[in-house]
Image 1 (tube, helix red, strand yellow):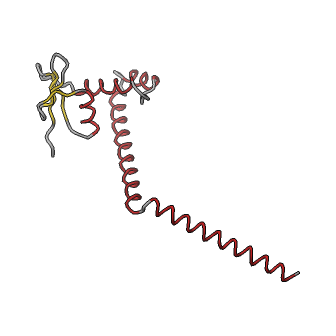
Image 2 (cartoon, rainbow, N blue to C red; image 1 turned 120 degrees about the vertical axis):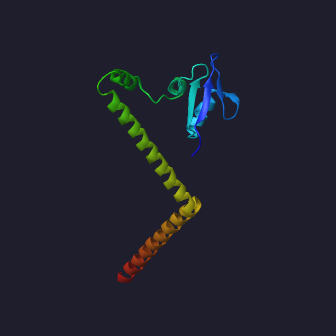
Length: 154
């Protein structure tokens, strides 16, 4: 199992990735999240865990630009849940829901990948076209045969 990556946040707000011995940006941290890298952000001076704060900052920036995930009503509901007796249950529910959503996304990607591996899309389209052409030919032959039968009866 890979070791937890340590990122230190300095008083000047700069983030230092100890694994690569370099300063990084919030966009780099977002990249770590997207890539599934386990990391922890700590205050360089006190050692306090700042991971949640950095993740919330990334979410805030994402919500500011582009199409937001969280509607105002959803955010208001989350705020109302703080301090209530249902806060722990909501946390668990949201974590499980996101885990399930992630599992469904992985399964969907895997099925699409399997479809593409098994079938060449052009080959699939070609097979459909051949089947349709065969059905059309049979229908035409049937109509011609019916026309011949009608002429014989006349």
